[in-house]
Image (cartoon, rainbow over all chains, first blue to last red; front, side, top):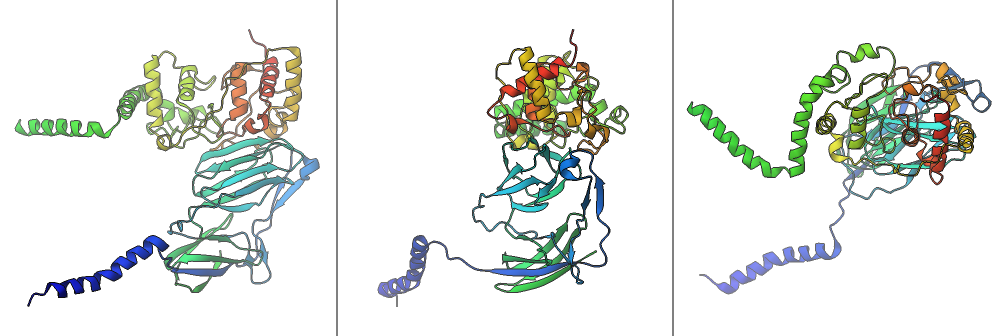
Length: 241
Length: 254
């Protein structure tokens, strides 16, 4: 038999939790879900590294020396732990948080860029400084196009420029061609660089299968797909060549 | 007959539907670019190529193993600008190059009407998508020139040394600095490139007035080793004029 009171009772019983939920979200904001894992690992170089590249200095020898030796493959102990390799998670989007607007320094010092290899988040700024008593020009190229080519006299003004696009930015000085560097810009926060012992760690990665990419300035790119699990720590090892 | 009438009818319907989707400026740009393409194919293609990559039939023979090869319009960097280093040029910059040409490399196209030159500008921009979403960052170059006096030239000479221009251009400014003589200077394509001989004004690609020299100093020449000195001149822009006066003093001018 149809009873309006019974129907009203059922309606209130079913709809009240929904209304309370909506009110709670409005007051407290969306609930944070932590579907994220951590990636840890090492990058290795197998074998004996090639001899360093030795370049003659033809300008400013008083300050830069007569020749410069560049060894991009920096390994440590018999296990061949490789430093300065950049590890990143591919195919993920930014976590939605605001990009912290810190300035990433690119310093001309003792006729080299410091750091030689650096990383930044898209939207951050780089600050270029010259600490040498000689003129340098910092020339940065991105996908074949000049990103910046600026002269800096000794003690000159620092130069700040925002990184608008993700990808590899190559850095050099035309006056001292042995001065080289690389800046990798990412559209997300999931990247890291191997330390002196070849280790890296990336936290807060969304769970799922992701291609993990390793970039090294002279050894190139390695990639493998890794299943990142929620709240887990995944170990991964990469080996060149 | 009926088929062709139907096709024509639908084309007109689509045309009228599509028109409001574009603003009047976009329609006018597209029309300009279309006209510009006709002129480009007649006048520019032989060096800059069908697809604007700077690979036209004459480009390679003009500069087989050294710079400067014809501009590749698809990459988005330009030497001759009034904008900061790394920025796209203003339309006026492209117009100026088309009008003046580049001594020794590109003829002047001042024979084209003003409208035709702007149409070519519109077509050149269509080769690079960045023109649609980037705003060029211009440098204000409206300052008053400093008169060409002995004192100004002297100050400019000191700045020439201070800013280490001689590394590339040489102590006598003949384009024979130590870095240049070592053959280490390359353009963005990896081709050998020589600094300008500042004692021979006929080869100055970016113009020969004091204002042109100031513009070159402040913007640099993207795609080449010539850097921008803009940040170093900030707060004492008059130094750029002194330096320009010194550079002008090195060459005889009729």
